[in-house]
Figure (cartoon, rainbow, N blue to C red):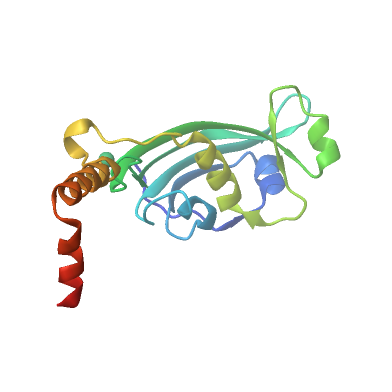
Length: 173
Ligand SMILES: [Zn+2]
């Protein structure tokens, strides 16, 4: 694994023309849209992207992203480590109209202006690859909601058993 930090800004058309590859890491910290779905900014994304031109002369970027990030467990709301991996395969185009002309099934990376943020590719692809449901294995998980519900039931039962005027006498103190 290389831990070379990648540039923040890239010029996809130029990289494709030159047939360049990008290998390195991007820090999760600082990816704002990704941050909204993660529990913290810890974690590095391993990025491996190959830029080039195919036989039809279309620009493309293909590769792989992998990361270990922290997301909230939906049962206990505590952070848990999640492995995310995804393949990238995008046609690089200059406009929406050009995007329509891409072969079916090939997603577009619309680059209206160079340079653009590398984060746009990394974030979009990674957000799509995140699990929809994140839950701890049972032994790691203390379900907050169930605990609260159990507690509420317990209080309710206790209140029913006690004299309703007891609560009032508490208030006088
Ligand atoms: Zn949990």
